[in-house]
Image 1: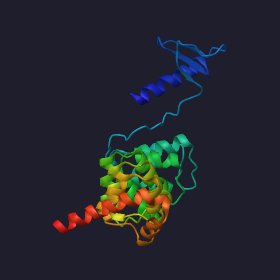
Image 2: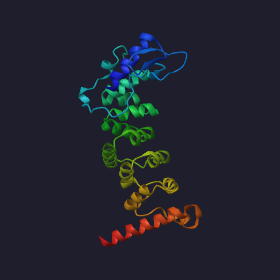
Image 3: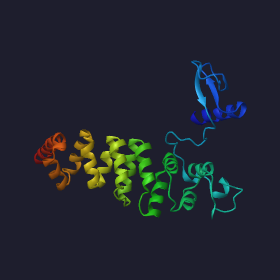
Image 4: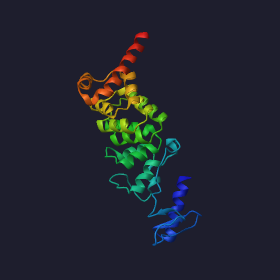
Length: 256
């Protein structure tokens, strides 16, 4: 549905030019120079990228994907190839895993590229990229937090821990704390905890649900942070909440 809509919007652009307006009655026209009126539902200022991915694609078996020669018959070799953004999107979404890995190699992955890799819905490819780079690239980790479903992220982290994942870098943990779901946060801290700087961020955000989850799993914050919270007035409220959470957890542990 999404791709059909994008294709139709681009067809209209080729027909009437840009920018153009789509009216509420379904008709379209070149943009009215007098300004947008109440009849206008949408203004399209230029071609919509045909590889826009707003959600995870349906899983596809790797043997049904294409090798380099099938994807790019006019490009004789992967070596030294420089792909356009549209070609790169085609490679990521429809290429064999080994073809994608061979091209991306140890390249720095942009936010858009990482999002496409996650949208491909092929975690085995992400693990291969992680192995090649010795750790999961931060751009992919961020995309996983922002765009994976909760269930997929939990499986991704659980399997990643078995395969030797390390803690995410501080800037990635910041995204997890500020924009991740509680389910994703729990899955991550179960295996990796948080860096000290991220624990401080957790305290500063005063997200009691995340703090409770952290205490439930890790039992306590690092001692230096505890001491700072106990004596600094700006942490008084959250420190009281933390102490109560910690006491409740200790009581639960005693009853086990």
